[in-house]
Image 1 (cartoon, rainbow, N blue to C red):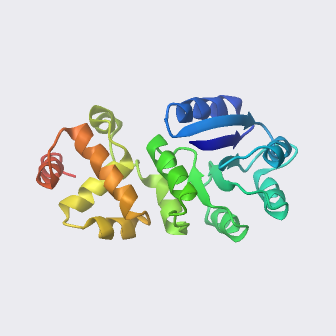
Image 2 (image 1 turned 135 degrees about the horizontal axis):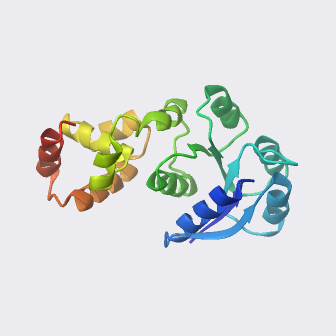
Image 3 (image 1 turned 120 degrees about the vertical axis):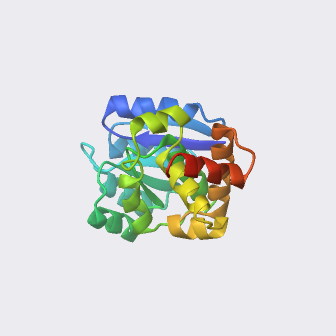
Length: 209
């Protein structure tokens, strides 16, 4: 069980995300805090695997909190949750040793995959991957996404499968692990009710992907 805490001063977002994460059998949300100081006080006393941290918080912002956590040697994976797909902020996060940077409008599945990869030390912190999160869903109509319950990332993978890319090649282009791509493939097959790669290719062609 992965023990998670959240630090975000937007209560509706934080509690909504906490409830979403609680639905995952691999996660246990241990606390939700609205500023960096409260987060650090908790981490000093409680074993925590992952902290999801917003950048803009009162009293102590996300970057300052992360620096204190690092300086005190608190063992916890640190993932920034941000509204901003800003290269400068992403580079700053990488420089201070953040484990991952996820946009707040990312798909829930994408966040779950990221948390697991970070804990298992399989996550590749890559600026291009992070910035691409911002437009992964923009190219597809909402009606299409809702009809098939596909995420923007899953559609990207279907397109690449249609183009003949291997799992390893897809992983390299999306800066993800092969294991994550295989997990996506299993979810896609389940959602679409197809049996194999040929079925995925047929779906892609029929829907002009």
